[in-house]
Amino acid sequence: MTDTAPPVPSAPTAPPDAGGRFPRLRLLASFVAPHWRVLLLGLVLGLIANAAGLATPMVTKWVLDSLGASASMTGPISVLLVLVVVGAAISLWQWILLGTLAERVVLDARTSIVRRYFAARIGALTRRPTGELVTRVTSDTGLLHEASSSIVGLVNGALALVGTLVLMGVLDLVLLGCTIAAVIVVGIIMATLMPSIAKAQEQAQESVGKLGGALEGALRAIRTVKASRAEARQGDKIITTARESASHAVRAARRTAQVWTIAWTGIQLSIIVILGIGAWRAELGLLEISSLIAFLLYAFQLMGPITELTQNVTALQAGIAAAARIREIEAIELEHRDPVRPAGPAAAEPARPDGPVLALRGVSARYGPDSPHVVRDVTLEVPRRGHIAIVGPSGAGKTTLFSLLLRFLEPEHGEIQLDGRPYASYTNDEIRARLAYVEQETPVVPGTIRDNLLFTHPDASDDELRAVLAAVQLDEKVAALDDGLDTDLTTSQVSGGQRQRIALARAILRTPDVLLLDEATAQVDGLTEAALHRCIQERAATGAVVTIAHRLSTVLDADQIAVMEGGQIRARGTHAELYATDDLYRQLIEALRIAADGGKPPAHVPAERITPVADPVIHPDPALA
Image 1: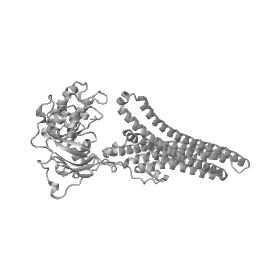
Image 2: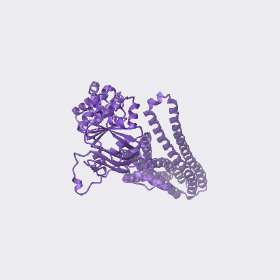
Image 3: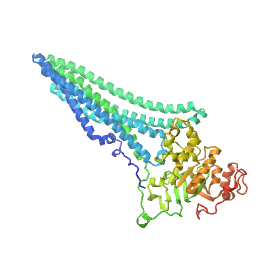
Image 4: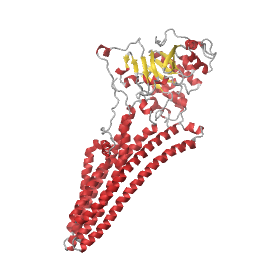
């Protein structure tokens, strides 16, 4: 089997932000860089639309001059109409083009993040609140929508501003000087306020991420919240985070309002000054009335580029903050995907049918470079057939062993082997195709019962599905539902035990080489538990079953038991052997109120269920014997 997982797309890598503003701008630009052709077309359309708008006051002056000279009005009026129609059509085209571009940029960013999530290491994801991860895909990428076209808007607005000022200079240099002075004053004030807008936007987005994480966690534990009468306290805690987000957003809104007010007020005051000075110059005969009117039209039109610049700079600030948060996702560590194939004769060496299917050789692991070891020097062999139970107190490292076997976690020292070959020589898909896993929380995926059962093997037939449902005693329950296998689990009432059975049925579909069960009988009743034990025994007869066990019945059914403490395997054997020789195991058993004498089970437990097997299926490590 080859590793056929799709590649993880990502936008071009941006230069690191050294604290300046231009690197942050390049960070945002990296999201739209793949669409540079569309951006270029939008820029050209914007220039044409600006040219049509800039020509309008000049044509108006032509109309007024023709009126004063009693000349024909047909030419100038026709040109005015053409400019209006062409400008409207091009503006519509540009609007649609940039709107489509914005949606594509958002889609690309969301695709990149989602692919990154599913390619990331388990630990890298679980260290972050789920709600915050969701916010990166939904809220943060949404801010790229307006910001993606803001770069084009900034260029168009700047060119329109420059073009307007040039044509103003053609009409009258004195009035142009007054206009430029006003623009400079407005620009300085805007530049002073803009950094605070960016900071407030970034803080608001951070608060939204925290809000999502807190709300998701509280809703997941809603039963505990209500049973603890903590609805008000938990609600107040989350609302406090929402208020922090609102506070930052209000601060950004205030700054934005100040920028807008200054821009509009500055232009209006400039127009009043221009009107007064222009009227004075016209009275002195230094300026024609038609030129003054055209100049005033440009002055009013100047509000367009300034407004466009203000809007786009504001959107740009929000987009930069979002882009920085999205780029943080690229720091999430990915799973190792490239196998190191053995060279020479070892590459063609077949699996050893007489050897263990899985083996851990002196494996140590931890969840971070500064974290303590959760598994230390573990040596364990899993035979091709049989049932192994792993027991121990909480924090002993039991679930970490499963994470290592499933390659959710890489060992720091030692080696894991599959069919006698190191894990490093396999892809993740090749390893996981040989294993099936039932989590302790037994989550069901969104969709129907059929979707859940087909999650690992989408091509399984209905007969196969009915067989595994019968194996976990859910066939009658599912058959009684109105929609049967097509019952939507998101709307139906499914108990914890039924979820666990659905997860087990999904795992035993097309019997895997190794079945990993993390306390698969934790939420089932006694009768269903007996049926599940029969199912496990059947699978153990044809393949390997490894369980993390807390209940006595699971322990008694195991061919061999490994006792873990402090990340190490301290003892191995059968129930009777361990009860007689290992103090920790005896304490664990007696904590379950099981009175046993000399390793004998209570009267209600058949003695044959703990008969030691003649051939141990776990080879003891001499160093730990």
